[in-house]
Image 1: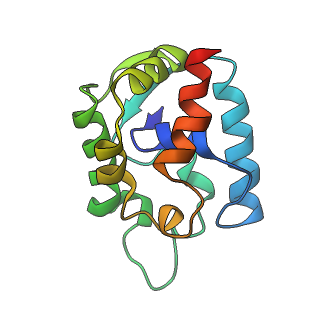
Image 2: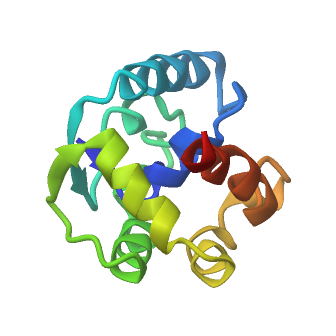
Length: 137
């Protein structure tokens, strides 16, 4: 299971994260995805979210990863790329759809408000270099 907006996060991950635990979990999951497993695309928390330190805090009663604002990023990218929620396919097949259909407008719509984007960890230019490059290989 992989949430929609994590299609971009997994391809752009560079080893930095909210915490060491988060980064280790993300590295493990990215490694698993490179083995091309079958995945289900969802608009809810996934295995990446389990290590997010923002998920549960004493101040928050709602899990950060389950908030409407985070779910909306999943819906935005899946709708923009014409990929249905709950679709099951291999990671490679889904990423091929992302490569075919992604453009700067969709990237900005999905990622423009993300804290990682704002911190400069990812951009459309980086996406084109890292994810689109794999299509050419």
